[in-house]
Amino acid sequence: MSVVTGTIDWLSDGAHWSGEDGVPNRLLEHLGYTALTITIAAAVAMPLGLWIGHTGRLRGLAVVTAGALRALPTLGVLTYASLFTGIGIRAAIFALVLLAVPPLLAGAYSGLEAVDRQTIDAARAVGMTEWQILTKVEVPLALPLIIGGFRSATLQVVATATVAAYIPGPGGLGRYLIDGLAISDYPQVVAGSVVVIVLALVLDGLFVLLQRLALRHRPALVPTSV
Amino acid sequence: MIEYRSIGKTFADGTEAVGDFSLMLPSRTTTVLVGSSGCGKTTLLRMVNRMVDPTRGQVLIDDVDVATRNKVQLRRSIGYVMQHAGLLPHRKVIDNVATVLRLNGVDRKEARDRSYAVLETVGLDTSLATKYPSQLSGGQQQRVGVARGLVTDPNILLMDEPFGAVDPIVRDELQRELLRLQAELDKTIVFVTHDIDEAFLLGDQVVILRQGGVVAQVGTPKEIIASPADDFVRSFVGLDKGHRRLHVEERDGTRIVVDATGKATGVLE
Image 1 (tube, chains in turn yellow, purple):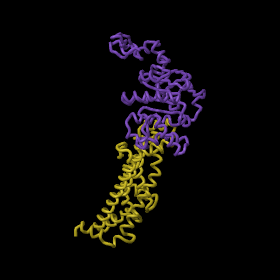
Image 2 (cartoon, rainbow over the protein chains, first blue to last red):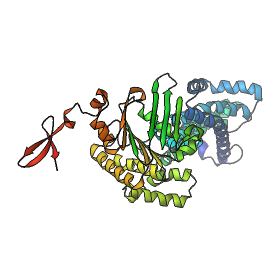
Image 3 (cartoon, one colour):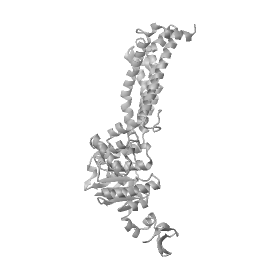
Image 4 (cartoon, each protein chain N blue to C red):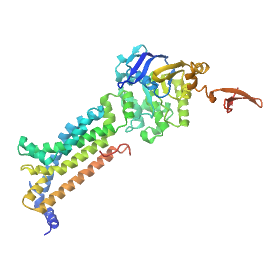
């Protein structure tokens, strides 16, 4: 039996679609990890990125730090973090947050930097406070790029969250990959990958829609990729 | 009345934009600051609403030093019109105009009504109110910019090369419009331009600046043309060129005005 037909059989087997180890439950767990990761990463990266973009300060440091964070091997960080947090989901979330911060940070500060200086100058000249300039001018105009940051962060986290299953305990769609590999059940491994890929494509599509929505009144005004 | 008292401005990088500048700008008149780029005219204009703070000296509005006023409150009380209009691209025309009113705490309904009214005042078709700035022509955007400057009915209107980026025909139209508005509204206008013809057309008082905010001459257009202070002014206003040296010639009983190059420019009545 080839892996392809094996995968199709695996996916069409009703037993794999219910219970704790069923696809719906693993999918929800996976989405839960992703949402938690993005929330924590955004809580760190958004205030920092918006501050850097608004003031223009510490930009060089942000670029270097974000670059360094991107270079970290996630599996290594996961193993290392486990030494401090113990075996469990916390180490995985920590490693994923480090992965999600750079694109969020870059989306925020480069989005603000892309806003026309004359527009900001005019907003200041008619009497907006710095906070009003940020919330009523810079963020709305930078929104497509900020969403772009969320888009790439989410995709990276969805893809990488499979490594969470590398340590025993956490679930998520990675369970199919790690457990399948352990017992050489390749149809299960491929089926797990297919579900992750479909999830990533669906989320990407949603973000494309969001970006279109943010740009609906301003065709070709702001670039949409980081 | 706006008064500059011994103003100096040195930027953080050490360049001196303005050395020592003093001037009185009478209320309800238009004062035009005119000069080449680098003469500090925009820097001087932006000191009135504290977009730039002077390094030395004081700017006073009705005898109150602007340095003692809250920047944000001060800016909301002064109209500002800039080159390229500076409209918020993500807001409709009507909301752009209403912005300053909303900042000043005027409720939504009243802000909209007053914004529609001022759009009519500046001669803009109100059907454009629900469009976005990018859907308007340069001249229309500039009218919106003027409307935004006027909507709070401020005593002072600052205009920083407002017509510099539109084509000559539209500029002509906007200049006439401004003269008509000023005849009605009687604002204290500070206007910055590098175009001497625009300065003479719009200014009750014209200030010709050299590099570094040095005043070459202050006066009405007539005074400056009649007795330019020096060769710099003579050259700047074009008295050394043909088109301002006019003489009268008689043709078939009509006296026509001809410039130094022999081109006819008009008829003497």
